[in-house]
Length: 288
Picture 1 (tube, rainbow, N blue to C red):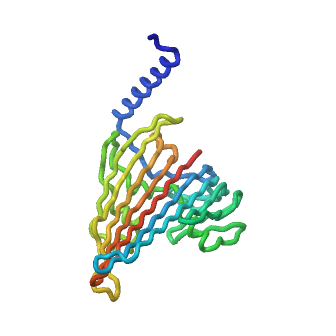
Picture 2 (picture 1 turned 90 degrees about the vertical axis):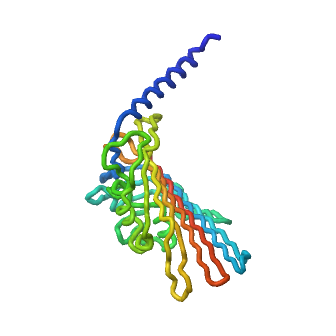
Picture 3 (picture 1 turned 45 degrees about the vertical axis):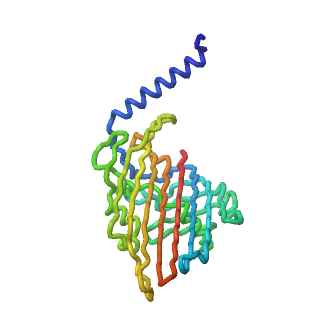
């Protein structure tokens, strides 16, 4: 059977794609994951935040209670960068809401209506959000703080950047000291052992320009939390994972970022035991 023209074109595309991927794989890249943003930059933010919490209570090795709570926050908003810090992290930006929802186990709520204009300020002490120059309700602020962050700057690069150019498939150690700063003093000081690695996982050449996808995993396998009045401490563990997509051309800003954490805790008091698992995930796309 003779190949049709459309089949021959498809075959040619596949061959060219395979050839370009092979070329990318042979090169070494200085990925520079921490990239600065600029004033007046504009992009469409599509982000989802999920939190799943489960708590189980046992007595005499029999489960006496088990509760599970799930929330999902969905936000699509047009963003305009107003000002940035010295390293290019957003300091103030304005967003116009297209869709902002909270979903729980039982209901779906519209947090802010379509067209709502929110001014956002970011600092080490927290975030501030206003609508019509009036601070939003604390509940709305808490929801916004999970999906609207000060993007850009050197923080991501401080944690994930390799010290030298890397090839596709190569792995290197995470900068744990920088990651501890992200966790904060209170949580970090609990974790005596904390390790992490980063991998240049994939190259995507299907879009307007090729992008690199970097994945990472950090783990604190066991730590203790002393509880006043309790006979024994609560033991815990933490796993944090990242997936970051950036153009191979370091002049351009990130394309997407996904982060997740899994925290497990066990507390024992005599014949009673409490087990808790908290999973969170934030997935964001920055569409320009």
